[in-house]
Image 1: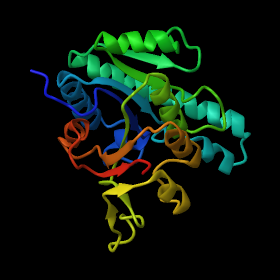
Image 2 (image 1 turned 30 degrees about the vertical axis):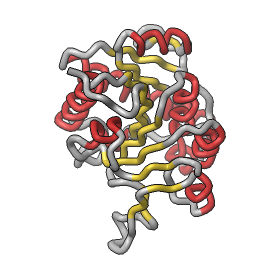
Image 3 (image 1 turned 180 degrees about the horizontal axis):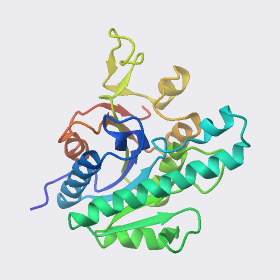
Image 4 (image 1 turned 120 degrees about the vertical axis):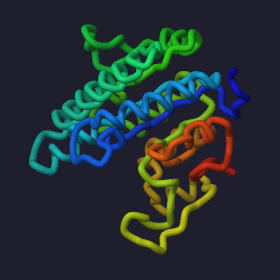
Length: 240
């Protein structure tokens, strides 16, 4: 029986690194299968779920530019990495019985639908899980910005940012044992303190369109369900 959730339509932003588990590269099968099971639980609770996935476990655009590659070419390679992750997540979800559509900002008709906003919304209304791949389809934009943009376009209630830490901290908790987690932040604070919630373009887009962000630990079982229910999980970023 679906529970009463605070958020009815959700955009989940996943970094590609989440799919690595404890590995150093690629997709770890146990990790992606566990994640798929949690995503199915979220939709079973009555939430319309869409996902924007990164590609950092395979290739990041800034990896290419650091070695002298043309920025646009490197970014397109990063977009292709997100398509690979999207297809992998789709497979994991479908093997557990979910109805899933991969929608790509790049035209790759053999493996994904092209992005059409009205069609995407209709998929959500039919209870399908959407995986948005290839970022915005443009170089020089991150998948964080893609997540903010898609959230506005599908009229999501919230952006959930699933990370490997339990929220936004005063410093990197992996390096600084004295780092303190914020329970709430304003967009202005996140931008001026450069806390790394999302890039500045993504944060500004959410601020200007009053789109809240919840940053939480997606590797911790049950946290996603708590987040969509509106429980105090991770860090809530909103204006005012």
